[in-house]
Length: 66
Image (cartoon, rainbow, N blue to C red; front, side, top):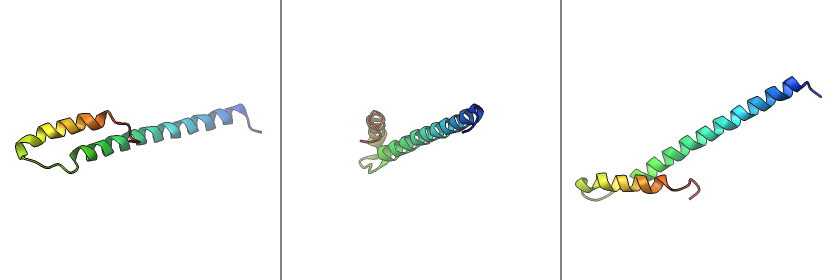
């Protein structure tokens, strides 16, 4: 088999890769929410700021799978 040191090293590297994937998924989720908040905006220029703020708040509460 292998020494315990090798198993610990493999476990550490595996957890680092999993952590990196979690961070990348969080970044992707933030980017998707940004795109959704600004997608398809229409209306008078003066009302867009409020509309964007509402959409950002709306999408911030939604999970990525929705």
